[in-house]
Image (cartoon, rainbow, N blue to C red; front, side, top):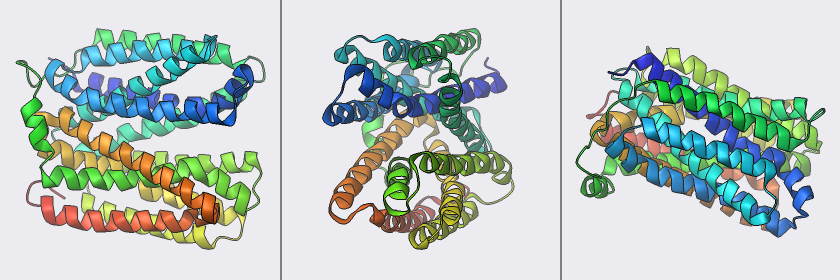
Amino acid sequence: MYKRNQVFIAACIGLLLFGIMLITLGSILPSLVSKFQLTKIASGSLASILPIGIIAGSLVFGPVADRYGYKLMFIITTLLMIIAFEGLAFANSFFLLQVSIFLLGFSGGVINGATNAVVSDISEENKGANLSLLGAFFGIGALGMPLLLGILSKRFDYPYIISSVGVLLLFAAAYFVTIRFPLPKHHQGFPVKEGIKLLKQPALLLTSFFLFFQSGAESLINNWTTTFFQNDLSFSKEDSLYALTFYLGGLTITRMLLGKLLKNISSFVIMVISLSLAVAGGFLLLFTDSHIQSVIALVILGVGFAASFPVILSYIGHIYAQLSGTAFSIAFVIALTGNTLINYSFGLISDKYGTKQLPVLLLCVIACLIVQIILIKKTISSKVKM
C-alpha cells in the first residue's frame, strides 16, 4: 500500500524537475548558438523541438499510467531527463543536441502529466487545493534554474552546471525507486476504446479547450513580454527578464495560497475572481506608461492565472477518475496545441502590426476563458462540486 505523503512529495519533485527543464533551454540557448555557430533559423529549429517533445510525452503518459501505473514511469522519465541534461552539456554534434532537446521535452511532457494525474488520484478530497500546491513547485523550478545559472556561470562554464544538475537528478530517481505508488487501474491492457470514447465527452472537451486558451495566454506572457517590453516600453534586456520573474513569482506564491483557499472557498468563485484579476492585469498592461505599472500588471496576471490549471485539472480528475491518466493526456495535448497555435498566431500578428498588440490578443484570449468557464459551470455542475 502506498503512503499518500510520499507519493505527493514524489509528484512535487517531478513537477519541480519540469519547471527546471522548461526554462533550461531558453537560459542556455545563447551559449549553444555560440558553441555551434548557429544561424537564427537553426536556433529557432532547436527551440521548436522542445514543444514537439512535450506534446509527444503528454500523449504517451496517460494510457501508459492507466495500464502500468506511475512508478516505472517516474523512474524511467527521470533517467531520460538525466541523459538529456548530459547531452545538452556535452553534445559535440548538432544532431546529438537535437536528440537531447527532444528527450528533454519528451521526459518533461511525461513527468508534467504524470505528476498532476497521480496527485489527482491520491486526493479523494481537495483535489484543486492539492493540485495548486503541486503547481507551486513548477514555479520554484522555473525561478530557481535561471538564478542558479546566473550565480554559478560567473565561476563555471554552462556545460558543467547543466551536467551537475543532471547528476543531482539521480537522487530524485533513487527516491522514486524506494517508495510505492498507486496500482494501475487497467491491468488487462491499454484502455483504447474507453480513451476514444473520452474524445466525445462534452465535459472533457470543454475543460480541455479552457486549458487550450489558458496555455496560449501563458505562452504569450512567457515568450513575448520581454520582446514587448524592449520594443514598446524601452526596457533593457536585463530589466525585461527581471520583470518576467515577477509574473512567475505571483503565479507561484498564489498557488501556495490556493492550497489553503480552495479548501474553504468555492472553486468557481476562485475562478471568477482569478479571471477578473487577469482582465485587470491585461488592461493595465495595455495602457501602461511606466516600468512600475508594467511589473504590477505582470504580477496581477500571474495571480490571475494561478488557479486555472489546478482547478480545471481537479474537475477532470473528479469526473474521469477511472481513466484519469488518459483524460489528462487528452487535456494536456489540447492545451499544448493551444500554446503552440496562439504563440504562432501572435508571431504573425507582431510581424505585421508589431508587438504592441500583445495586450490586445491577451485580453481576447482571457475573454475566451471567461466564456469557457461559464459553459463549464453549466455543463459539469451536476457532476462535480464547484
